[in-house]
Structures are given as C-alpha cells and as structure tokens.
Length: 175
Image (tube, rainbow, N blue to C red; front, side):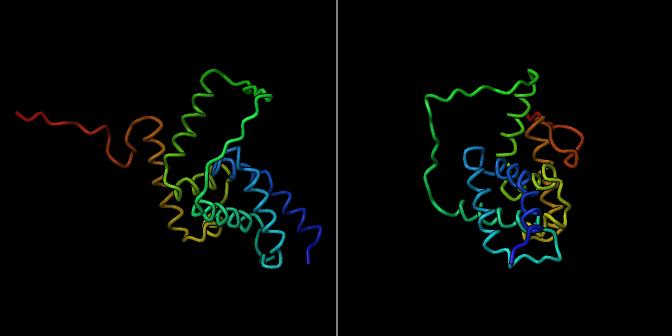
C-alpha cells in the first residue's frame, strides 16, 4: 500500500536521480532511465524497507537498470531535429572547457570508479549509502573512490597522483 509520504519521498529524490542519470548515460537517455527507475520503484514499493532511506534504494534500482542496459546489445541512437535551435548557456570563457574536460575524464574512468565518484561527489551520499546502492562493501567504495580520484587527477592535470611519488618519472640516459 502506498501513501502520500511514499510519494513525497520519491518526488524529493527526483533531482538527484536526474543528475546521476545524466552523468551515467548523457542527457539524451537520462529521462528514460529516471522514468524506468521511478516506474520500477513504484511497482515494487512493497519491497522497500521502510526502516531505511528511500534514496539509496532508488539509486540502487537505477544502478541495476543501467547495468542491465549496458549488458543488452543495442544501437546508439541520437535524435536530430532541424527546427530546434540550441543555445549554449552563459558561462565564463574557460568554464565550458573545464566542464568538458571533466566530463571527458569521467568518461575514461572504469564504470565502478565513475559510479562511486558521482554518488559521493555529485549526490553527496555517505560511503554507507553508496555501498548499499551499489551492493558492495564500504571498503570497496573507499578504494574505488581513492583510485578514481587519483586517476581523475592524472587525467585532468597530466601529473601523476600524489601517492605515486613527488614528480613525473625520469628517464635514464643509457649509452
């Protein structure tokens, strides 16, 4: 049985679900992923442990749907409309470049690291919530987060992560 409180909690999670979906699948397919997540959650609301938060439960549903979509072969489609004019949002000159570089660097991370970074940094979930969402141990969350941050740092500034030494590797001259 669903209540108005269940509906309110689910609606309160929608902005975070949208952000996470956009980061996982891009703007074109994000709304579909959110809609599938909400639809599945609403149908299975009786499976939600009401003693816990709804947010990690919803994110775990989204995670599982996304993994299922990755496993399913399909064509990458992109809708084109000649009549639609898209205007870029107003940004500082370097901001668009920085956002693009961050997006590209995130895309180069392994999926497990990218998911953990997005849930911790973007959605501000606790390590325990991320662990519950992805159904992995908290130690794995911390490990993936650390390795993901190191790799992001390397990708964004081109410098090795702090834990790998004080500077770039040097080459020996051999005669």
